[in-house]
Length: 215
Image (cartoon, rainbow, N blue to C red):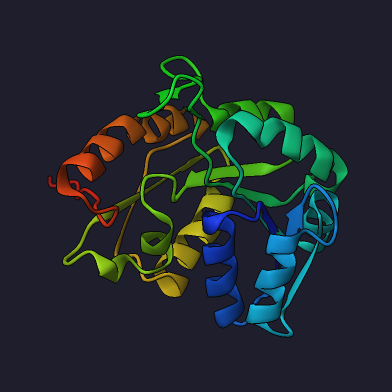
């Protein structure tokens, strides 16, 4: 499959590397073609990896990952282009973290809205699926870094799109338990989990932490 990755940070590079390993053809996008981080990632990742602008990556991908900071995501996706996202699954991994007043960050949007919902409203022809935003990058693609079974969440309006993403999470990334939270409004809960995750990280002094939903 052709995959577009929007963003050159640790999340984008980690997901991109794993997807190349799975045999996908991955193009990483940034504001300008030839981004130093993107070129370095391509050099390390081999023939199935390439880089370009946000629009290049979105056009390339049959499936697109938004791996940009939540406060910048709409700007990035506008640069990627609505035509390049139309009809495609857009996996939103972003979080609305606001560091303007230092750390720990606050949420720039919560309670009555979410970045996931904002993206779906702005790009109604895309099939937005919110997932993976509740764990650190390495755990996204290797949940076995945390012992035992723990839970990943998905939300989105399109059932078929969610099913495809859940299959990737399970068969590609190794997630044993994935919980569907319903429509894209579930992104509010997924994004509002971040303050708890950050407190756990600070308390336990490790980013390799997650929760399991016990019934």
